[in-house]
Image (tube, rainbow, N blue to C red):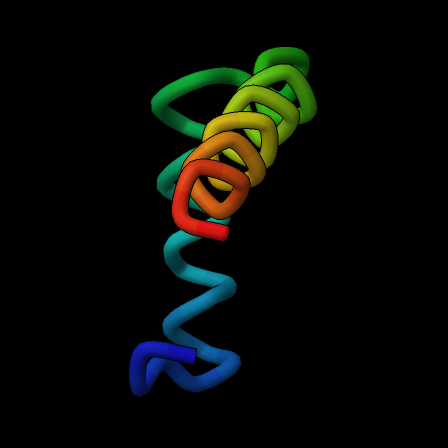
Length: 44
């Protein structure tokens, strides 16, 4: 996935938790998924 290994993904997840807090992560992931779905639907 974008040339990222498991160590990089763990570091990225840690940074996201520090920036947004553990309670905001599911909400953030949900909104990113919704946006990705919307973009995918636009192109199909």
